[in-house]
Image (cartoon, rainbow, N blue to C red):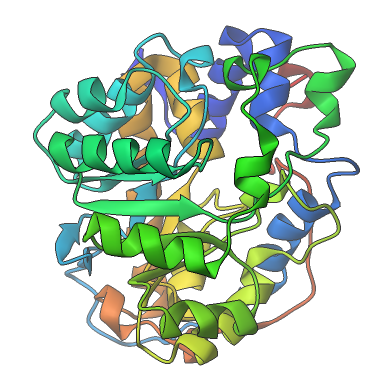
Length: 358
């Protein structure tokens, strides 16, 4: 099946055919009015390229370095909860796909299989993302398991002090497996910078904070010795009426001032999106919906094919921009422009037949 996919539009179409309505709504939806999700796409759509010509682009290198590991393209697989609703191999399939293609997987703490089983699925560097769903004793036990399993980094998500109202799946009375037995909400609501310090010291691993949205918090994160500042609004799935992440990126880059690496997620659907994020200061992007669509379309092979298509789009765009390596990209390659499409979850795909994505 995988050889049939010529574009990521086709992968989305296949995913839609394979998924029941509840799982589809969970993957493509966001909170309340979904304004934040639409702004994620709009923030990309409002950026234009400034290409340079008559440069030798006969050889293109799309690779970069992240956490001292080489990535084939500037991307990682984002942590997604309940991957098992998209494919029965769930997180293990994503981890194997990341290894096969040559990037990194950040595994969610609320997906199958268990963190040890996913770690053992393939010998390849991976990071663990942790939701704080227990007391300090629970946290210590989780960190010990993460370290024993061989994860090379720890990511704490910090934009989930309260679970949001995600109305698409609510309307069909569908809930992801991880929300069918909800943890005590007081644990997530009580997390502070002091908590972050304690976990960082306990883990002794490269440390990421996912959910940074302002220069103020980015500066605090750097002051607390965070290794990776992750610009995210949870794909528009938490606070509605937030800014798009690409609108947040410039102030975060300025606040970080080179003292930490930067990841960005939210609305990334094209190779061009990845290049825009890198040009404005991100070290890598994280792929959420794209990963889910790839898994739903064809499991591990679908995720690998999705990444191959993104890589091809990156090569084409870099060639036409006049850049031969990722480190050549910078703010001079992009500028503000009028958005030419209405921002929605499919706005990167102008060829998508409407009757096949419903």
